[in-house]
Image (cartoon, one colour):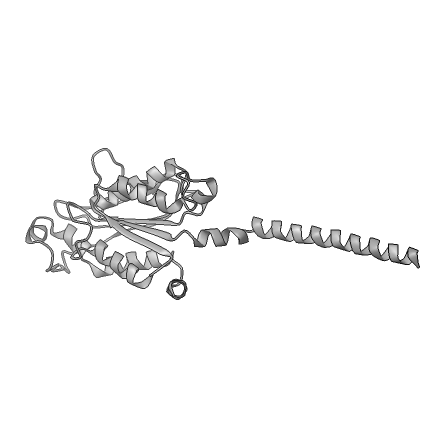
Length: 258
């Protein structure tokens, strides 16, 4: 009888050890598959940064980059961070991104925090140049970027808005080639194995001009085609669709907000 009890205890002990091993292996498997990381990533929103062109204020609602940001904010009340900056405020935009990514608020980004980054950057005119420049700064810190979008990008002195750094997964360029001020006609990947160029799409307004009635008269006179692509709803609807394709379903963010 005593021998039977000892045998049962031994079997139970072996079963316990086996079960513990299975649980440990399961947890390890889930962690390696990213299951554990999903909870951490949920704390960090998708970051959408826009840059306006010229000397436009970041909150000037006449301009399409600002209107786009307002629509995104209205749809995504949580889970998505959207902000527009003047194109001279790139450093401010960078610091805001780093602050958001620093989930544990220790002042330093870990490799895991960098990997969790989901960043989209778009910009008009000089803002297009700053879009690429910001992506390059993030590349220096080994922070990935989901998507960059340039609209009639005009390079600033000392900046190269045609070469997309390798930390960017996808990039697209919209431009027009007429008038005194026109955009970069072609963007290329620094490393095509890491970056997919979605296209360089040209718009033409000589046969179908746009009025852009709310824009300043001097923009409509002196930089007419450049202004037309900024107020072109067809272009900005495409920009918006590309951005939304990288965002979580709106229903999910609404539920999280409630």
